[in-house]
Amino acid sequence: MRTVSPGTGIAILFFCIAFFAAEAQRAIPELWGVRVHDEAKILSSSKVHQLEAQLKQHEDSTSNQIAILIIPSLDGEVLEEYSLKVAEKWQLGKKGKDNGVLLFIAVNDRKMRIEVGYGLEGALPDITCNQIIRNEIAPEFRRNDFDAGVQAGIDAITSAIAGEYVADEGTTFEGEEIPWFVGLFVFGILGLFSLMGLLIKGGAGWFLYIFLIPFYAAFPFALYGWETGKMILLGHIIGFPILKIIFKMMGWSTLESSGGGGSSGGGWSSGGGGGWSSGGGGFSGGGGSFGGGGSSGSW
Picture 1: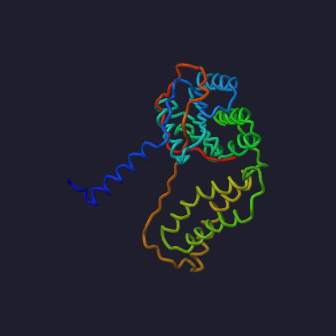
Picture 2: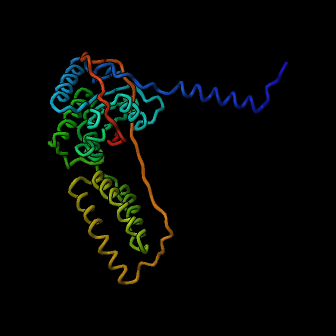
Picture 3: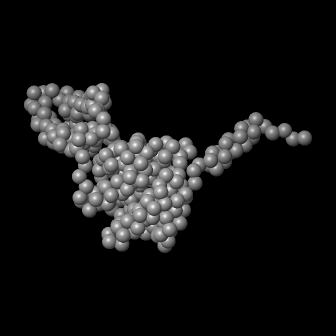
């Protein structure tokens, strides 16, 4: 009787683990010709049909394709990664326009995401998606009124696409007062990198200046709202070059750059389909593309 070597046994074990891990991954649902998929069955049937009709009318008048996917659980999947995979499989939006949007909700995980196609990232930037989640959807979900929350989210998304959505500046950080240490941490990190940019000689300092602009745009706006965020962003854009010149004149720029670069990346996601499937018929993705634009949140 032949014996199996330890190396072969380990290889077989790893193969079995990889096989069952792949099998355990949550399947990406089919589109099935409808825009509203409620596998978790949290929406009333009348709301499903109402949303289906609203989204069809929006597509007929604008060519934008918006779909909703609600699942009971992510089953261990990463929200942003799974959402992006669903959006890519469904190919929401027209080819060349990339004007698709996916509203994804994982009920038991209490997480949600708005996934935005390339062509609508200007009308639905990450900060607007975040405001819609925090200000419109999450408050209704915390009251367990899922019909109202999903409806409010879709209304806000279509309004934002039309350039008509105005966020309530009175609510930030999910409507609660922002803990002081959150701002201290965020601006401590930003301030440290800004100081490095001021002290470093040559192009590396200016690289940091440009590199930090998106962060000065995103974090202050998300934490403190439009007006305060705008002032902080302008402070960085205008103030850094002035301070850079002053530092150079005073001889304070003493750090030598040693080359390098920087990169940042991201992605966001969503999940599964079934349950209440609205009876629309004939709906299919138009070949749109997604690149991870949008925002995630919880309630």
